[in-house]
Length: 94
Image 1 (tube, rainbow, N blue to C red):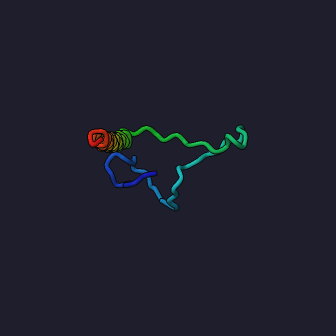
Image 2 (cartoon, one colour; image 1 turned 135 degrees about the vertical axis):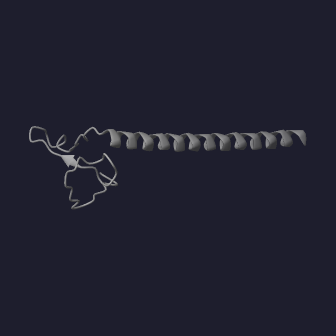
Image 3 (cartoon, rainbow, N blue to C red; image 1 turned 45 degrees about the horizontal axis):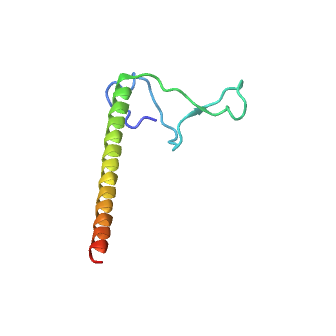
């Protein structure tokens, strides 16, 4: 959940002992819920530093996705031009 505990303003001077690192997010259970609703994500606390970190990560992710979409669009446009030239040459040679 926390990548770098030593970042400023990320922890409020509490002692933190990491016992185990999981790939899945932390889950909590509520006895009032049914079994299908038993596992639900625990809400994270608000923190200006972590919010800023998430904002920067989301910003970088959006830029990567935008670049990927632009590359795919350029590739499709190039493929279309190649097919267009093939068709033109095919009909021009007849």
